[in-house]
Image (cartoon, rainbow, N blue to C red; front, side, top):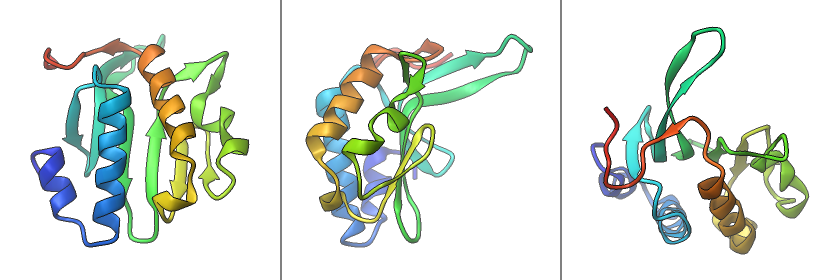
Length: 138
């Protein structure tokens, strides 16, 4: 799965349609976040992080994964000291929310307007050293 399209095309319906719709929503609301595939998922906005401890690595601002029983949407951005996913838990009652993860069975269970707001805020508040669309990571 070298590209977002090949990742999506490899999925069965109805999951393929949900993941494609989410991919398009992310691309529409956060076009600066370059799409990529890594770790068996779609990612948007690759960045490099470095902790004070010296530990460092690479991640993405937003990541999307199709699991066997649900879809996972990871949002690494923090606003006001809280991860966006946990900040919007009350607005996404049919999802299981972790610190930075939103898990759900079907996209129809979620308010896409709320998701678009989360994606816009993530785009405006990226963690780490962000690689923008058009400038690949080193």
